[in-house]
Image (cartoon, rainbow, N blue to C red; front, side):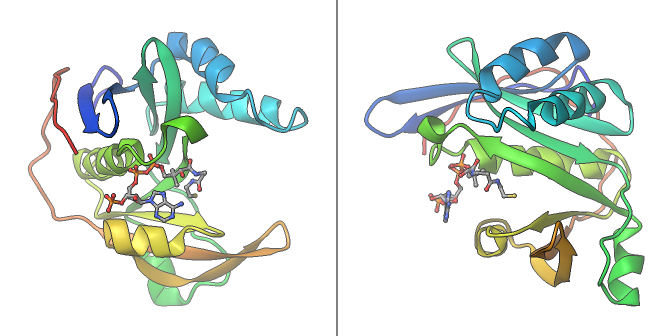
Length: 191
Ligand SMILES: CC(C)(COP(=O)(O)OP(=O)(O)OC[C@H]1O[C@@H](n2cnc3c(N)ncnc32)[C@H](O)[C@@H]1OP(=O)(O)O)[C@@H](O)C(=O)NCCC(=O)NCCS
């Protein structure tokens, strides 16, 4: 998936129709994304978040996906081609992750949750990994392990300790496919 890759629109059938577009960001999208997404963040950490958005929108070995609703950015997801496997995994797991992409951040603003936005982000992760010739996606999470397992069929590989907190490492293999270049397109559906 190129930096100018696809866009999806969706309608979610809650009390009112919900329309959202998800797209891979380019550097000129970063200021707006930072403005809209950083509002509830710890002021001491916002510079880290901005730096991350800038790097993921610019560098070719990673991607920043954004969700937009009524001209506001309401969520983001980041993925990187290869990242060092977390400490604490056994040798087989470390070996497996060498050819996996790492999902390094996923967030939807609270008022837009439970409308399927994150599900589309995870699908984008998988597609991005596939298009980059990788065999799967892995994530590290403190609390959302069951969510990744039940909603997206990730498997637990082990645990790791980061910033003195134990976290779960999960991974999902992705079927090999012919690399496809997805053009910008829109798809709508209801949930
Ligand atoms: C976790 C998060 C990304 C989910 O975003 P979302 O857009 O609400 O997720 P979706 O609407 O795509 O939900 C997908 C499924 O997960 C379920 N789900 C959503 N949030 C859930 C939660 N906190 N716990 C359990 N299930 C949850 C939904 O009901 C849905 O299931 P369904 O398809 O059977 O209805 C969002 O709550 C968030 O940003 N949380 C804070 C940051 C975070 O935890 N990031 C990810 C983990 S590292």
